[in-house]
Amino acid sequence: MSNDQYILAIETSCDETAVAIVKNERELIANVVASQIESHKRFGGVVPEIASRHHIEQITITLEEALQQSGLTMDDMDAIAVTEGPGLVGALLVGVNAAKSIAFANQKPLVGVHHIAGHIYANRLEKEFEFPLLSLVVSGGHTELILMKEHGSFEVIGETRDDAAGEAYDKVARTLKLPYPGGPQIDRLAAEGEVTIDFPRAWLENGSYDFSFSGLKSAVINRLHNAKQKGEVLRNEDVAASFQESVVDVLSTKAYQAAKEYGVKQMIVAGGVAANKGLRAALQEKFEDLDTELLIPPLHLCTDNAAMIAAAGAVAYNQGHRAGWDLNANPGLDLEMYGARKRPE
Image (cartoon, rainbow, N blue to C red; front, side, top):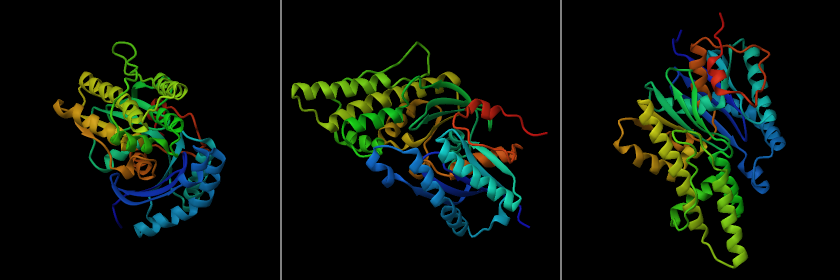
């Protein structure tokens, strides 16, 4: 009998239906993602009801494909992990109930996983963690700096007070009439433009690691509206470059300062905006002279996927965490409380 451990994971927190299998906590065996971008494009953003319906249609197909990719069966699985929150409640419910059904039918342990913990642990599929470490989480709904002193322990030392960076990207993209999703479009345009507008940077109080992008978003939108009223022509490429310069300056500077203050061994970047080329370049430049290893996941592990949920779920499983059959979707699940949950006796 094999001593290898296999965790099958399901992720349906937003608009990707994903199933993955990870071996021995760090080896990715299968990773299937069914994207819904084309369905949501015409609405300019994710429509929760449509997302939920697509998850129902895709969940069985992605599960079967993941098992086929791996060459394994449900008998080989040690546990079933699933994103329980945060996310869209209807979307989460599809994944949670699918995971509960699979675990019950096959008599496998069930493990609930926090979505952001998953984004962080995506990096461990590439490189082993060294503690203490900091994670800069930048996604559509989250911008946070998280200190980890050991596996499964999460301390939020900074978070957004209003719009997350990803939200600001999407709102600016809509104003520029760019197609959904807006983040990659802004990043592409920024590479072709020049920084010609000095947009504001919200540094907040001295020593604060919190973020605020609402003022920046409003400044960009107001600048565009004022230019239109005056008949002034602004190049979208320059607006995108100027906006992105402000965002990545704040993100990279605060991450650098926090890494120095806390003396961490690694700085991990996580979340969908981690795919942003401007942010990657700014962080690499900032951390060149610091004795802290910078880890940025490959592009396929930045956006939502189930591999990250399997990686985080494997750690939780091996720490003794188990979910009951009453596991429910928790759209407001708190990361620190999730990490502090008592292990079963």
